[in-house]
Amino acid sequence: MRYPLRSASSFPFRPHSSFLRPLEAFATQMRSVHVRLPKLNLSTFSGKYDEWFMFFDTFNSVIYSNTSFSNTQKFQYLRASLTGGANTIISSLELSDANYDVA
Image (cartoon, rainbow, N blue to C red; front, side, top):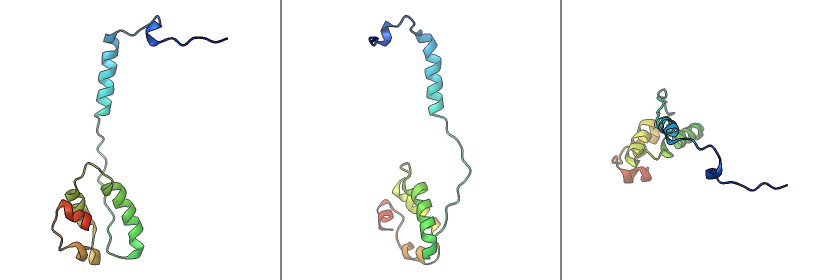
């Protein structure tokens, strides 16, 4: 036996709009809630091979993939994360959007 599908407007009970408004307001509020996470210390990279994979994975997921940062901000985080020989290589580059891609 098959039952025909009915549209939502054909059901006997339809919630009143005054009932839905508080729910919609609550849903909007929940979307705008920001959680303050503890400060995350990025790993550093000095140029040693054994540090590379941990540094790359962390930097890539936290900084590089973050679309809310400009390239200049990403470059500043990169500079702060590099030490030793790795820092020396990029230290002469001016802090700019274009130079993030160079670094």
